[in-house]
Image (cartoon, rainbow, N blue to C red; front, side, top):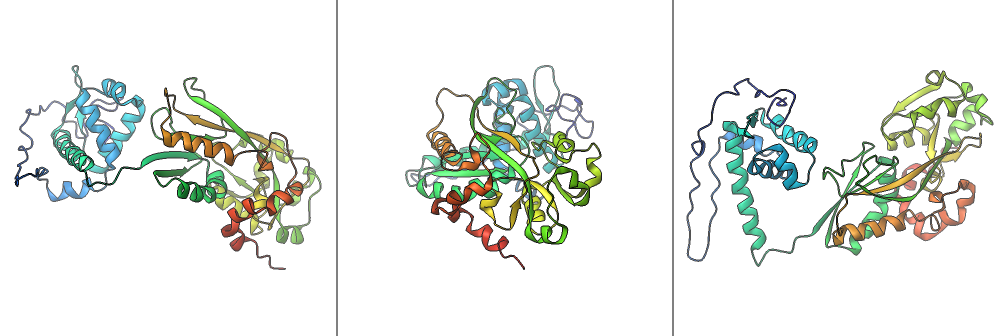
Length: 385
């Protein structure tokens, strides 16, 4: 890894320890040549070695553009102010470039950033790429650029709830380029990693705009196949007679496991563990054991059945947006769509009060819900009696 550059405070020396070697300004790369035809300007990027050209294919343009902004600002702190990214985000994303190149980009210097030969070369390449991009964007024949809206959400809500609805939303708004990031990890909204985050924990950063969308209710579920073979528990005292399937990931309230199982020796009862919401659902639906699922799981597939053993969990769903004077039009549209998607009046499993899945029948059978899960039902709802 190339975490020893000036972008990392802990170890100021470069990757190979050669932090004292000075780079002569303007001598790393000859200036690009330009061949012009009448009425046209042709941008010719600087020549690079084949090995570096291959490595450049692995670098994300957004990371490279951030490196360009920080390098031109002169320091990480100045770059953070100019780009509105946190210092930690800048270091992490530029370290990602260094890892892919296998070389350090800058050394520590009292006056700011001192680029290594590789860093200077990469800076020149980034400038040429940015000029070419700006030239293309200003071309009158170029199609108008769609606004990109990045939404981070927990895996289960993203896979089973938002993605089926997102297809219709994007069709209604073709001017938007939607990126849905399904991950149990909390997104760095303040650092610019995403525009909107849907998560189950309230952020500690008071600067964030936070809106409560609804509640996620959870309870034990099992498949009919498992219940036929192992019986149906009536109370938590019967847990030792059953196999438990558990999800271990960020934003999963694992500290509640002893309460759910009614014993401090909870680990002894777990037969299967996974960090994936979709794998967790599959394990339960295919007879792997009893597990905790959102109550809307009954709307996803009739193959999972809720168990009334007196365990009901409640998690609030928060929407986090980076504070700005006025959100972009695309972000505003996405926020309105998210409010509708978690409307407890239309979708009772997101209501503030717990509603048993048995009471969902009317809502589940309505066309605006059942059509969302056709793909999942096709694969999960065939019970082998």
